Amino acid sequence: MRNETIAIHAGYEPEATTHAVAVPIYQTAAYAFDSADHGAALFNLEAEGFRYSRIANPTSAVLEKRIAQLEGGVGALAVATGQAALHFAFVNVADHGGNIVSMPQLYGTTHTLLSHILPRQGITGRFAESDKPEAVEKLIDENTRAVFAETIGNPAGNVCDIEALAKVAHAHGVPLIVDNTVATPILLKPFDYGADIAVHSLTKFLGGHGTTLGGAIVDSGNFPWAKHADRFPAYNKPDASYHGLVYAERFGRTAYIERARSVYQRTMGSVLSPFNAFLLLQGIETVALRMERHVENARKVAEFLRKDPRVAWVNYTGFPDSPYYPLVQKYLDGNASSLFTFGIKGGMEAGKSFYDALKLITRLVNIGDAKSLACHPASTTHRQMSAEQQRVAGVLPETIRLSIGIEHVSDIIEDIDQALDKACRAARLEAAE
Image (cartoon, rainbow, N blue to C red):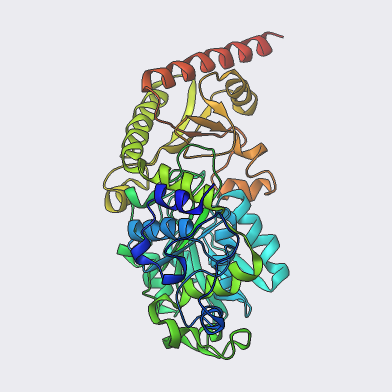
């Protein structure tokens, strides 16, 4: 397949590139240089352009540009998965050691990254008692390198007070990193409220079809790395691997994202393939329309569940009695997420019976698909966590997480209704025995 064909269909803009890549000929792993000096300038980060597809390529560059524009940032880096994006986002601020202070309501694999994997690399994850700014501030010390939050927790559904968290982080001279996967820039632009770095699993709502893995880091360009030179020496002291380059001096507002690409993408190689970038770009074309349907369908499903006597509880932030309802109004313009949880009367066994009886709704651990999806977090996404860690993260033994899709809402509700019937019937039979 010709490289130029992929690029054009992905919205490739030749005028925005350098001479060396304006007319790519074949799908390629590397790019030709005009001269020895041109190649040296590219590798010394003195000239813009493409040199090797592990570092950047024209199709992924278009994806990065569009994600940065959606979030209102100065630049983005597309990588292989959302977890790779989180890994790069954390080490890019803490590779000289230190700690990351986080909310307790996290996706299970992110919790594992902070609690088990990064500590082996000299980076400690600290988990606040709650998502309240005052709980976070208690854990910040001279070794803290960032505050981290999911703008909407998965699966807890909690909505973080981004503006208050940003003020706390900035008062201590550290950036606020947020995972904006569930909200997407369509519902929430965290940079408008002081967040410094946004991370996405593009696999979810932005891609939208559950077919393509991808992740992204977006840089707001607003954190003053040079002002906090002692805490962030990687941005303010010469980098020996680039002949003494100082990132804060050379790149200014784009220092964070340029370092992520040049240091981590180049050496760690969590590369997003150009074809995946092309597929994700197609998904982004419809994300605004899909998010409207996701949100509206979820509201109707949550209302159905709350009125149903077979259901014990529904954790949906769109209800006025939710503790997060005011934050939904402030940050999401009243549009509660299509990701929420509920529990069936009868506990875990009834929940499992319900889960097994689903027909239209697919049983898998992804979210943000055009299709409606269901998950039992305690036995899957959060299985590595202790019972207490699960509870704090918003996961109970009976919890069912729903990611409501864009099918006709009557079909979604009909499937839930029949599954509830089967779960209740199974519970009655068990009781009779």
